[in-house]
Length: 275
Image 1 (cartoon, one colour):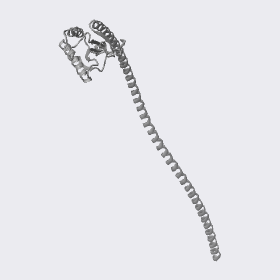
Image 2 (tube, helix red, strand yellow):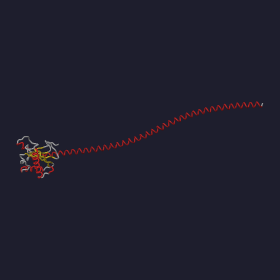
Image 3 (cartoon, helix red, strand yellow):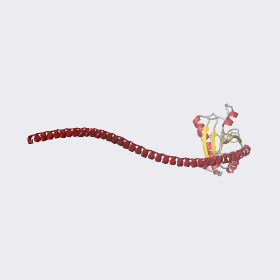
Image 4 (cartoon, helix red, strand yellow):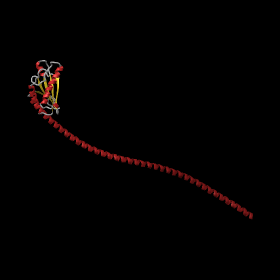
């Protein structure tokens, strides 16, 4: 009896042990299965976390780039605003400068008009003075107009020198004295005395003789009170005859002294037009 109980108890214990082992195995399997599932889920979760981190990093990089672009855009906008302000200031200055330039140009134009009117008036006055001087001088010697002023011609028949002489005769002095009286009353002119001879004699001889006679006339004007600084002289000898020919009448006209009166402020053409 006791043996049967022991056998039963042993069988029961073994059964219980087997059941417990089976249960433990099932539990262990379930735990392992769940652990693997959890590990798989954890791995998936880690992947998602990594993906999320990558997305976050990308977003952060994009945000930083956007911030950099925004900062650059702000700097560009600031520079553009500064440039626009400078451009506006430059435009204002340009407008002021243009207005000033227009004012200066207008004043210059007005001054130019006034100067032209003044010059025209002075030309008219000088024209009248030259006309009057020509009229008066023509009563003494033959006087003609040139583009520079007047030329007085003293031919041999009215203004004579002895042979090979530059000494002024009393008649010559009288003519020069009357001319000097008119010239002394006039201002703003230069005087040039030119001597000429006929074709008789050598070129060198006639050039020197014509210069001596021009010098004699020039010295007389200086003695009469005409300022020496406005007087020049030159001898042309026989190189510039007034008329062609070798007759005595032609030679008498070519043996001459000419006095050129030059307007030092205004020039005229032969017809009296100004230039």
